[in-house]
Length: 81
Image (cartoon, rainbow, N blue to C red; front, side):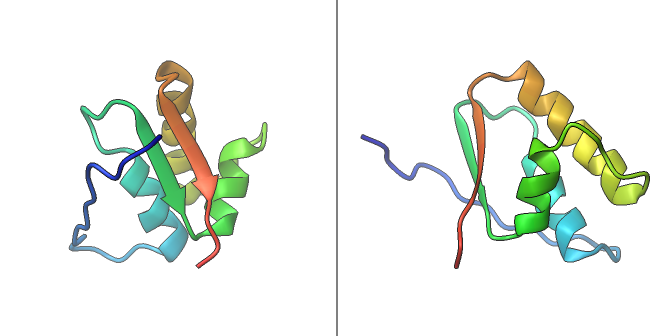
């Protein structure tokens, strides 16, 4: 049985794409037992692919993949809204 324990929204004071913003949300530091749900399918797909795009988004995705690989209690899933 799961319970919703924490939610967060944040303003970024620079321009990013929707995909970059969704991926940046995963990089929040100091969290444990995280189930990150995104309605941005390209981000969910990019996190599951073995390759990473060569772009600013790709750099963010690489950081996210590293975070997920180093934290076995992180789960990422796509949720249609």
